[in-house]
Length: 462
Image (cartoon, rainbow, N blue to C red):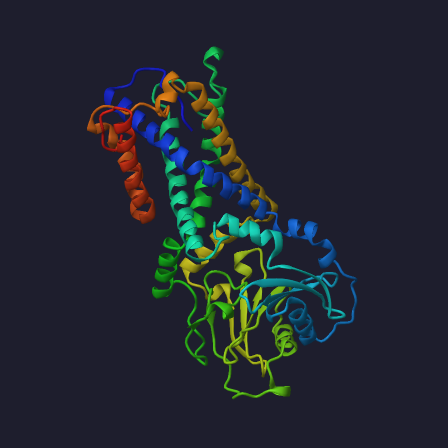
């Protein structure tokens, strides 16, 4: 979103422009590779269903039939094929599609087992979630798990904060100040100055910057630090998940193997106890058949996900798979008696939770159908276009002394007043997103080190 100075501006404005331009450059260098990965994987994940059907068509597609096998047989067949314990099952809306059972194996790995619901025959086994789960983990940089995965997830939060800084500084640079340059259409300056890439960069950022900022802001709740703090505030203020039903015990935090699937972020890890049945077995054992019967009686539309707790004292969770946030609904069902412990709907969520879930649905391109998906895809493509055009602009203006440890960054402005524009943009974002603020401090230290190596005098926030 940059445009070069064509007319002389007052010293303070010129210095502020140069300072913002310098930080816009460094922010792009630092985070654009990560943003390109995030938008590539995010753009692919927008087409999750299409990718799944293309890759696993032979496992998903089955012959439709009015006959249905006992649902508990689905779990038994999946447990044998996946060599573990059936943890949840996705019941599709269509009769010509297999159910998907997640199987947790003793070694900690997981498998997705496709089962024909009409015959309880296994049609295929793959790693949990298949290709799109790998894309999802790449998108959150949590593919490796453990401390490494947590550290990379924190990096995503920092990158999202800097993406907002990139857009804010780019808007500042684009803003007209009695100078020629791209405003709402390509400029008509001397062709010898080759303004094409500058105008492409500026106009792309102007028209699509709002989508990029939206993706960055709505992606923050997934992060390991800011997201956890946000969820804590939402729950402690009563503006998040609804209170547990009066007849039930308070919400409990599930252990990882019992965390319900498909309930959304507001109800993530929230579980309720089942009725006290002692340690009954045989006919009184928990049953998927009984839980599905309850879901049918309660009018819960398919598709939905049934989570099967490993702990016998917990209720089963049946969560509707929705595209619109306001269609969310979760049933907590006693696996033995089929009694409904809680029936939670969108109307019961607090205002923060509603905004949170709506933002996620839009972020994933689901809330408003194809228009939503295309808008998010345009945002992802725009990041690549901005990165490529920015790289080309840098290459065209790179200094001859680039090989002698010169970065080709815009020159630092003289005087302390030039840093005010940068601070006005960066400080509010650093307060809102503390990890971004900490990374800014690190960037300042790096900037001083680079200036020392290149023989320049240090200047704060230059």
